[in-house]
Image 1: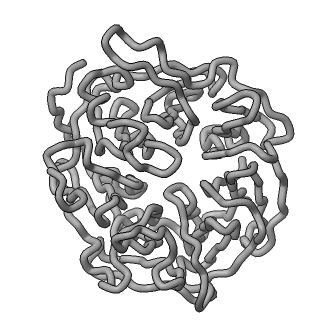
Image 2: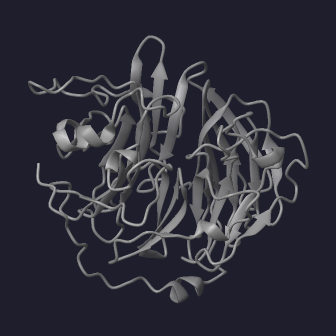
Length: 402
């Protein structure tokens, strides 16, 4: 498979200042929160003011649900990535907002490996991404161990995509299932450029960040400027462990990354990541998993750091959970903890479990490892808990209903 570095095609940047000037009088639409957990999935339907929420669930009670997504192209189709006791790893599809579900006829699965390459089996589908707006029934999926799949029929059948799954170089970068990532190594952060369906990104934990500008026929690594764990060689792609990569909705030429070794920003067409997390408070650090970007301002991003000390307890630092926001592209960060527990809160937030809506002001939502669902109606200034006692939350998404 070709691995010649490719340069992104020249594109006219989206004007962030223009995006900021979007009318505040745009109508508010009803929202639905999608919570995927270790023991099932729940839907929370919100009113237009985001003050009351009606719970729908559980769905798939007792089964591990890694990700739940609503198709933005029709506002009613749901896909759920589940690992069930009797069906194994699979994907379910609903065309009526969860009133009924149908299992994929052919869920993501690795093909028989070529001679000389060790075979693998999908443990679970971890990440779901709707395709480009122009590709109505296209979806992408990332699995554990690392694999990239695509569906062209709305999630009913899945096939390996682009050839990376069995490519010798990528298999080397993927490492082995014993590399230490909890619940197994993962392919995640699948991104489709809203301007061009052939421009794609994905990340692997571990195995780095990768880009294609030709619809997956060839890929280039994007790891320049990224640090790795002390004692390892940053030139070896295997050692790069991105936790979450996001593309700015208001400026698709800017990406942010929360990695195992800090918070980074990338401005295209450059290929050098800049660590913007060094301005985080030293006692907190810039290690974490989730990352949320403002829908209209490419300088604004939120993170939720965890304790990144040597033993990696994977809890909130000092048991004091807080979001942090930058409004200047990472030059400075401010703590946002009003309403969150003031002591002895040792939970944290997984990489898919924090998200934001497109309202004005932006609503933020996060799910915790202790099963609480929190929200802020004012871009993180104050938080309130809208659900407790759920199973451990793996992913939270928010979507507008048609």
